[in-house]
Length: 453
Ligand SMILES: Cc1cc2nc3c(=O)[nH]c(=O)nc-3n(C[C@H](O)[C@H](O)[C@H](O)COP(=O)(O)OP(=O)(O)OC[C@H]3O[C@@H](n4cnc5c(N)ncnc54)[C@H](O)[C@@H]3O)c2cc1C
Image (cartoon, rainbow, N blue to C red; front, side, top):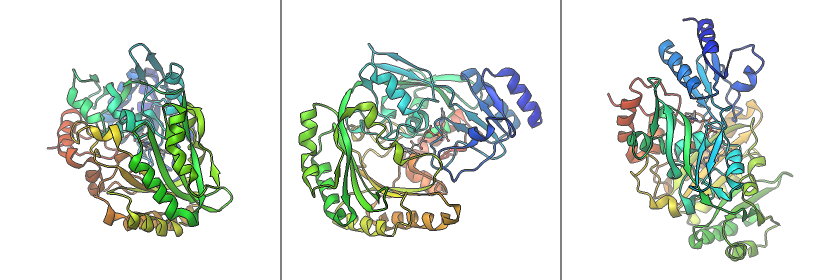
């Protein structure tokens, strides 16, 4: 079948629409969050429902077309768009249906966390989502899903009760604790390797609606002591409180160190928990305050706009002793772009009470991770900015067990070795399940798990 015939066949059969180069919406649809990614699929199927996904998967398989799956479009590696293949675009599928009594939500894969939070918070409910609300629920949940509620309620994938998923043979299956349980295990951290999820069923929790959250800012020369204060906070923090630390640049070009803080529970408790951090220095800006949970979920959105060129390199850290902090501070000092940041993320709590092999997500012993986030706008500066993130990452390897969160693998960081490091001890079982549901590796434009042969 020619591309024209594929387009015709799909256009006649889908409820959504089919785009190809020259169509009005094609340019906007092929662009994703990371401005480094500039790929042109042969066709984009903007699906309206599971039947459209089945039709698109069947065409891709039968025509042997490279197949990319896009939901929220925030894959830092750019896996959600391909050259010369078929792109399944799920971003129009945004239905979210709640059962507040049972505290369950069913969401389609095109929803972002902002949209999901809006629906669930109307009933005082939430589940763990990412810390930037423009991110898609789909890719984030399938890789694990780390966010402010994680220390209390586990990862997004820990709250995933079931999925509807179109597998490589074009069948729509349900995966739950009772049906295709191996598949549910695999999609709780194994990413997009096993099919296209058309519906996510989540467990919800009572959260907010008011939480304590915000940023603390100190001048960079205070970084060592501020990061020590952050470390002390993490060592005593209850599970309903969390924080990330970051080294970056203020909007007026001044190098700074920040802590982003989050607490849900009684406001007075949050005040008491953050008091020592807020007293330290004091900070030049203290934006911690009571706010709606949906606003706390969006407090980092403006710092992460779409379109910048972004190169990430991440590692789990064994700890954040002084030697680690000094190494990170030294590395951040040579950062070439004011849009970049070095983040120290803090996990633990309920995330780490799940067994390493209970879900595909393996990092159940991680408490801290480093994320060197290079961001810039001019393609001429690619080499310098990429080299900086790599240097920063390299400098902390002596303090890392070598593991990495699969959703933090970015452009050029998808070697077999890195992907294996991300799936850790679950890699072999994932390969076996992959062989059952996708033996020809149709779904390979992702952090790929090769099926066992
Ligand atoms: C600004 C920013 C902030 C982030 N913050 C966090 C955070 O706080 N916590 C965290 O855990 N992660 C975070 N991430 C990482 C994020 O989880 C991943 O980038 C994730 O893949 C994004 O999901 P998406 O649906 O937006 O992306 P997409 O690019 O649409 O999808 C990414 C990949 O997921 C797979 N996929 C997507 N939808 C489906 C589906 N329905 N069925 C099967 N496979 C699918 C595909 O392989 C696809 O290539 C962040 C990323 C960015 C860019």
